[in-house]
Length: 349
Length: 215
Image (spheres, rainbow over the protein chains, first blue to last red):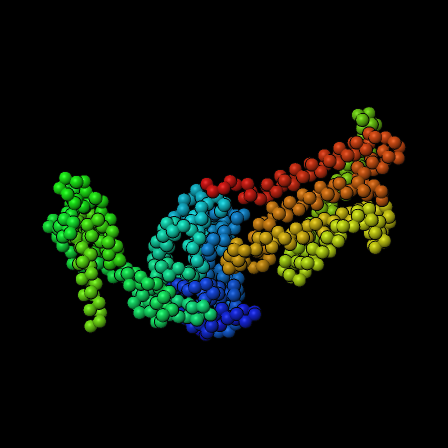
């Protein structure tokens, strides 16, 4: 656990970057610091590994005050990933990854071998080990940056907007793999972003900062979306927070209509199935060719996906499939709306 | 020309060898001094401007005047080769201290910040990260200093140690054009070879600068 206890940072010139911050980052979880620029989120992150020293207050990791530890040794126990990866241009991928083990005195051969093994872990081919960073794409560099942070197997990781500089599709892939990796590794992670969507997607806990280094609200993503503490938080999480909140509700309680009998009331569309019962598309006229599905969902998917499927479907309905891909139900957006209303009544009771 | 070389081969060779060490020892000395000085100018920001200014003033002193000032200051004979060695070392230092400082400043950024956050201590970071990254720029300065030194050594002939410059003074005194031409050609050849040597050395030391763009 990382603990901030009444931490304040005033820069020379009187600019207060962080103002009396008290916060706990639970062990084995991702805590996201999010907020507009100038809110002190990065300063807070950097005080953990002492690349910035607080003006007052204490930061401790598992009860040990970081200010009493040797800064260089402390940092080698804390993984660090930054926006443009910050790889060493004069070292190969393998040597970049081996940085911290080499600083710790691990012999070169062993450190390199372990570095090559880590490449697979972050989704890169071993053949990249001998390349230089300029020979990699931005997304690949970022993966190497993550591997470098993991190399000495630190219990704590600091990540400063690690995925902000790559394009949206690559970012989405990196985020998913990051969550998969974290599910395996269970590191204690402090993650800085200015992107509330990223915060909600990745955070077990999200700490929203406001300008001047004040903590506006701390909570699970769902708590922040459901009950923002004030107007600033409500504004920051965005107008469509109701819709985003649906991503935390699974579709298992959603009532569906049987596939064979389903006919859309306004367009008359019917679902077309193949011989195995898998959905192929929507047919609007007897003779016409079927129009493609927007996609399908299973009971484990969330209501945000189901709602999106229903809205973007040509027939105004989402198709549920079982684990073999066989259609086992259809839900129209009217039915989703009824379900949401019932959900709200239930929670108000 | 050929006849002159055949008759004076030993003298020309010894001039060439003298020229080489008069030019290269100052490069090594100047470079060795410019690394700590350049580093200091980065670490102590108030030193940067003085280093740049003193370097510029030093470099603006004509070489012959400098060669004549040094014996007065340090008390060696006017004809000692030390005068040329010290003078050229000062020129090299003046040129390279600023180059080293600017090169080290230019590599500051995300990468050095990452190095610090990963747990480098300052000195290891200097040698392991900053100097290698700054190497291409420092090498560019080293090449300029080397070629400049090789051309300046000739002036030393007027104060007794001039390498190939001795061929110029000798040629003028005796009214021969051959030694002058031989001196010019050999001096240029020497500069060219040393430059090629430095380029090859740099290619060897900085392999990452030669790899292509993204694969």
